[in-house]
Length: 155
Image (cartoon, rainbow, N blue to C red; front, side, top):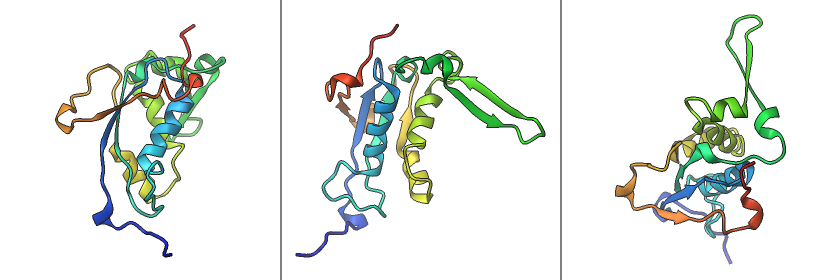
């Protein structure tokens, strides 16, 4: 019995579309991160980019549990002295780029190395329902039906 290690010729990439409307952010991000790495495949090899291409639509309608929508802060620094800035998740979701919340959550669930930065290029997040990737014939992945805890009604 030998250990199987995938080569670039063994890798088959698919396109998957996920509707984020009403789905809890952390649960969505963990499923997307797993798909991007390829951990859902039996031939998973940690040092190869075997994950699927993932399209997330309706990112502006993602849900958060508890008071995270108002209390969770995203920080960044301008590079100048005293230049730390922050925004709440609610401000970002209601702003011009609500897809950044989903992108950041997925990015932080991947390991911080060169391979994960390459895998992040296979993620496309759209705020609305239109994605424009119909030519790739993506399969629909229903995250809501995987577990009843994946969804949450808006309050």
